[in-house]
Image (cartoon, rainbow, N blue to C red; front, side):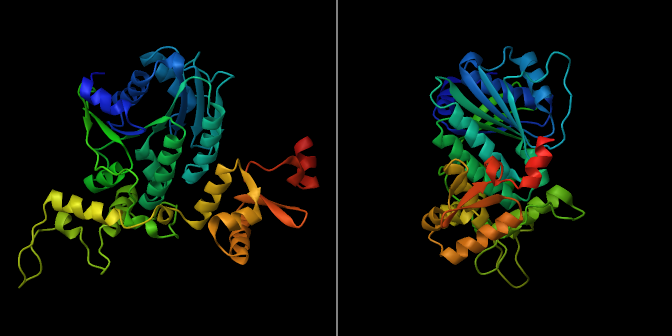
Length: 369
């Protein structure tokens, strides 16, 4: 790994870094080397969010390319299938936790990750978060959902004084998708296909900016059933992103011929014009526009350790009591939360944080067996 002094200084001042590297063993190695170059392994807490490769493979790769494992290591594996993959001798050590979540529900990553970051507070090590990879994430969810999730995740990382690294293959995604995601990060590291050349690229400035495509509160998190698969869904999302308020498609200037319809003047759009328009658009929407109502409630519960009074949910959201009750009922039907009546009010628990007394006698009896 060879990053010059000025680039290294920029990385040292960053909370969240986008790594543009090929989705190959070379790119995976670059991700691990970037982590190790930030903090010595024996002084690092590493929370690794993995998708297809299981934790055993991550450990094998780290051992091969870096050496000793980090002082503290935990995995959030976005894959519900348990495996025994990985070379012999590279099994997950007993002191390393592995939380498994549904890859189609990226928001489910936030709770176990936040819990892990809280557990490491004050232990004297630098906490690092590694997400491998955003390319695989976009195979499971649509662009809007991924953007909202990453917006929340990067702020979580920053609030914990951690450093996040997010791997993405630039050759698989179109330029507009990459440029839109760049607004979420403080710095962007680009690695050549052979892994020999490293550089730190500029971001567009305000990493907290949001984009107009995320204002919808009814985004479907499933992958569209279209013949085009991932790329069609991403292109569709990006097309919607750059549609104006009047319904005109502003992406036509970059995807089609610069000529307009017959009888009109020729219009040509430069990259700088597109960038300025994009930055102007994304600054118009408040941070709350990023979240669905269910996301807001889950974020609140996560912030309060997985549980809070229903009355406090009403107070924090400024929704009416009936609105909160209705939304919580829908979430309870989906298994996202559990409500337990205590006195005259209810306690709301995020899924996985319920006390044993919240289970039904039949469920407890089954568990005991």
